[in-house]
Length: 74
Image (tube, rainbow, N blue to C red; front, side, top):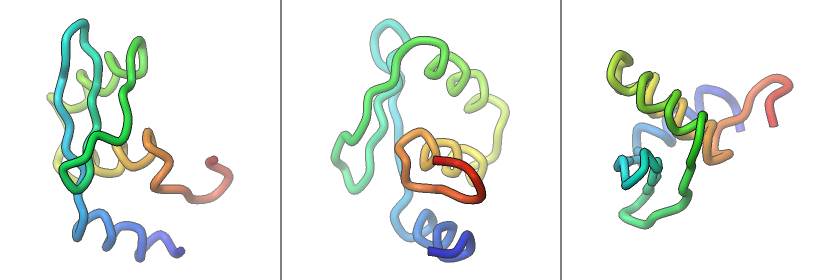
């Protein structure tokens, strides 16, 4: 899937998130919880989410869940 196709898919089916107890990051898609992230990664995302625009947040959530890949990323 091309980078453009992946971005269009993010617009059609966006991720949502909640910050849980102890700064757990709960990530949802289509109203289903798909991932829980803890620790430094969750803390870094919380800081980013306070400063970033919606598209940047969506890309970061997609990368954290493995739904967005490009180049040498896995």
